[in-house]
Length: 114
Image 1 (tube, rainbow, N blue to C red):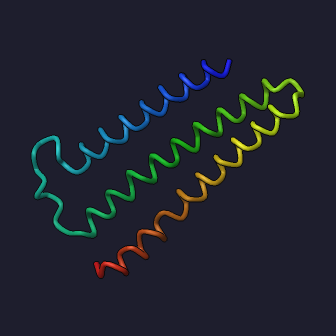
Image 2 (image 1 turned 90 degrees about the vertical axis):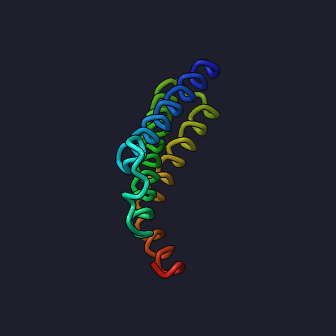
């Protein structure tokens, strides 16, 4: 059961990363060869923030789903229930980081002077 979950989560993570990269490429115009469209450092940082937040939310949702399924399938086994709770905790941390990403980007903009 663990191997199937690991393979499924790896495939889902790969799909999420691939989708995020494709979205970033199409959003910034790299696919059409227009790298000069990024007119300022602010725009680059904002695009990067959007991609990272999207990936974080998608990954946290994946962990939330896996944690819920593990909790349901635990069958009362205390170690499995604890593992499921730990996975749900990690999902919450991921959502928290995704929520704080705009604040972290504004701090970064202040540091680089953009």
